[in-house]
Image (tube, helix red, strand yellow):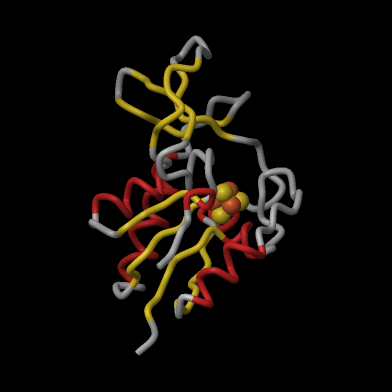
Length: 149
Ligand code: SF4
């Protein structure tokens, strides 16, 4: 049976970024395929909120880290976490998670974290879906750190 990897859908060329801009990375897809991975695509934000949509930031609040929309400050953490849990429940054989660097949903070690005043306090966080992959002990990397044997 093929090994399976989960990949941010925008990297595979799906038009699902918040502003509808393409951000495909054919090299990442090639690397995974050459290494024998079957790819399962995911995009929590498009699935939960549609495209285009208001961008989000990770913000450290009194109640912990939340994904808040940039301007209207709506808390979008719960739907993303629910999408992530459902995705991994339905794909229990995922061995590798490859997330789009710096995304508040998908970034693995590169998501940006702000305080409530809008100051950048970290550039090394896990996005909401990447954190769920980590909680399930799934190997996880940012797209730009993908190096496969
Ligand atoms: S980074 Fe993640 S949430 Fe953002 S468009 Fe890509 S797959 Fe969707």
